[in-house]
Image (cartoon, rainbow, N blue to C red; front, side, top):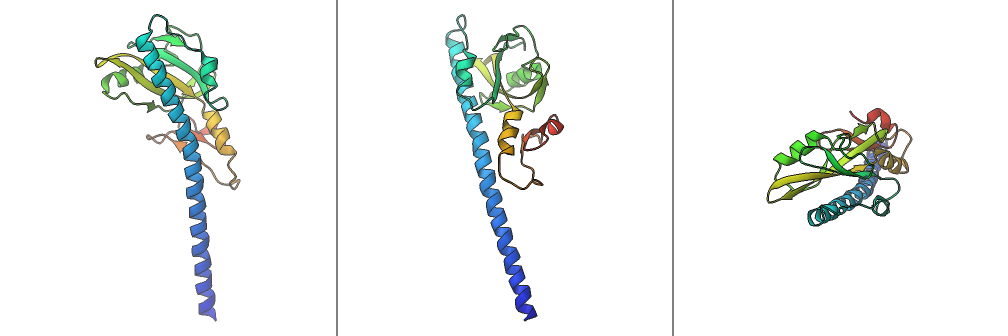
Length: 196
């Protein structure tokens, strides 16, 4: 009888662990897909703006309100374009000529890369925005020469609010990390985690 009880307990524990793992995987997949969708939208928007800038440099304008409607909630904070020197030449926040939004290190790093792919940077705090943002950049190249870098600022608060809506135990934490291990968002106390 004692052996049957132990066997039953092992089976129960194994079953609970399997269910827990399955639930965690489903939850991870669902949350990851929401973030991936936001990144795909950002990539599409920045590529569209890059093409517009390459064909209409003198008349380049962005209707931020129109662009913002493509994004869920308050997920998009700004879009900026910096020249190859890191100086902002266009921003939806009217900060032309300042370096606050597009980090010159991002421009220098993108100049050295051959890639025309989207890059997600570690969150930074903008004095102008007075909040944290996740920089997502896309280089503008013509004949292998860097002409500038487009950057979208995504809201870690929006992502964290999205994670906070997930139905999990009050003791559980969900996080988005970049490939360097920096926090992009988490379901609770995001302000304490950003920049780390």
